[in-house]
Amino acid sequence: MTVLHQPGTGADTGGVPEWRPRVAPEPLLPDARPVRVLGTPALKERDPELLRDLYRHLVVGRRYNEQATALTRQGRLAVYPSSTGQEACQVAAALALSPQDWLFPSYRDTLAVTARGVDPVETLTLLRGDWHSGYDPHRWRVAPLSTPLATQLPHAVGLAHAARLRGDDTVALALVGDGGTSEGDFHEALNFAAVWRAPVVFLVQNNGFAISVPLAKQSAAPSLAHKAVGYGMPGRLVDGNDAPAVHAVLTEAVERARHGGGPTLVEALTYRVEAHTNADDATRYRDADEVEVWRRHDPVRLLEQGLRELGLLTDADAEQAAAAAETMAADLRERMHSDPSLDPMELFAHVYAEPTPQLREQEALLRAELDAESAAGTGTGTEGAGR
Image: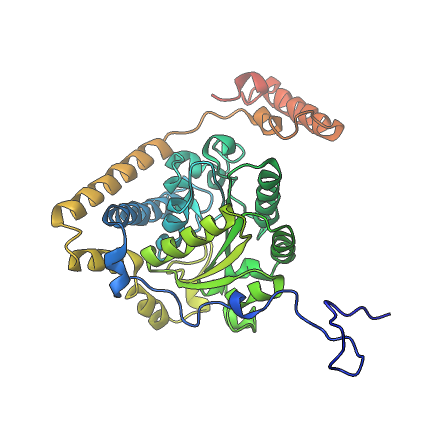
């Protein structure tokens, strides 16, 4: 039996039920061209203090990427996925949120996490291979960095839906890369978000590659923002290296969600200037000329140029931002070069409110192994953990 969606009376079709779309698709279609603010008259309409705040965060974020990459080469981090070139997306995402909102980052979104207020060292804890997420998600309203692709998206939808049921004034903003849009979790999250009209915003940072796979080999869609139409939510397309534009589009989407308008899918066109991680050789799959083109569209330089043209940024302002970045980098170096005090048994804490039998069994097994090593004279048993 075939059930036609939204049937009409069939009066004009010879008695055959007429199919009608539930939602008109035209208003859901993304912007014909990426939204831009820099280099347009719209820049003059933006709050000058917000623009300077975006600039300060971009400068600090660029330095954070450089320092974290250096720490990885020195063996102080197990891995670091640099977001150099994508700073505008992450800073704008964090600044578009209100204190009661939640951020759901992927593994590359360390700048968004620190811009939200999380300690830079705590942000790197997971990438260092240390204890859990490294920070208190509830305090900062920031979910743990997600290393599996797109699994944070259904979590964001669940939290947003629960907040709506409780009547809380909360929006969830979930970040994902272009590669994550090929995952089943992406589909499930957007589908449920649209059906439930959950107050959630999805930001796709389309940086051109899913590790070594270019976008053209991932999706045949006109744009990733067009995927929104199939789920029944609006899609937006924005220049991801234009910080004021990303902030404007995300702020509009967040406030739309907050006031009952439902979810939005935002695609930010940007570029991953560095390799996927320190373990990747990007020269094997992309041309240096391509990278150079995007270096000329650098988000930090573009914003600085735009602010200087309007007289909103002085040499003293730029020097102050650079000094703050160096202070952050020096503190990060000093604290990351100190060996952490670790207790392996803490791996079993805060996994479940009531530990499962399997977890207790694993805990007992590790405790026995550590005690055996200690008895053998290695000094790494549980009574010596943390030294």
